[in-house]
Image 1 (cartoon, rainbow, N blue to C red):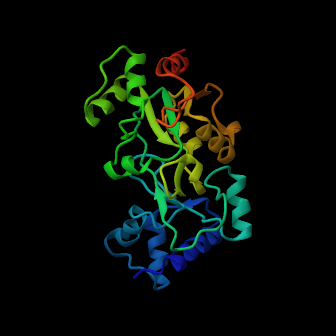
Image 2: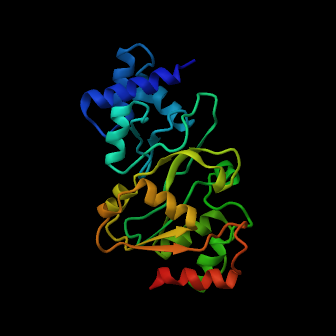
Image 3: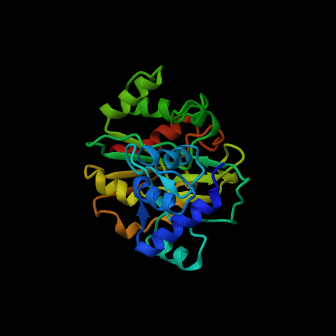
Amino acid sequence: MADIKRIIALIDSYLEMKGLDYVEPNEVSKHLEQQGVLSYSTKGQPLRKLLREGLIPSASQPSGNRWIIRHSGNSKGAAKRVEAHGVAKVTGHATSPSVKITKGLPPIAHANSEILILGTLPGKLSLQKREYYANPGNQLWRIIAQLFNEAIPDSYMAKLSLLERRKIALWDVLDSAVRESSGDADITDGNANDIVRFVAQHPSLRIIGFNGKKSMNLFREHTDISCLPAQIRLVLLPSTSPTNTHSTLEEKIASWKTILE
């Protein structure tokens, strides 16, 4: 069985030695094989398997299927360097290998996406189904459909088609975190997605909408907003979660219309 703690420590030392902010699996796998902890067979597939299983919390997929691995932040010097770049900071207490890490989903976006909706981290049902906002009680899909006077999508493929037609991208502020339930209040030890890089890769974006206050607070905690292009407008939106009973559906729709302005 792979020694995860040693693998993470070796990746950290490699990043420090090379002075890198992140490294790709193919590159660091060669280093891990040289250290005798993990095989490099099939272009780093053993390491990629660990990434897909969420065992390397500092790994993420900023766009598409491309993995990148950042420093875990466990050493004092590296933690300061990571924090200075405003990405992938570690919050809360240190986690032990026995703690279950919740790993998020890759972004849904297209080259011409104009609106990015950011949540916090997918709930358990969404992760099980590998679908954004899979909880039937969540109102996101109903709200987006009504914003554009369309029928509510009845399948996930129809939902993705709606996003593409309306130039909307979906992602989350956090790439991974410790969380026992699906509730945002239980989130600890969050590792952030590189939203700044994502925005740079999608120059048509003009609005980032936050699906609830927790999403915006996490974004401000992890991201250097000054690094965003001047045309990006940040919009706080009422959460579409079924736990948000402070607003009616009609009131939420009225607030969400601000992303169309």
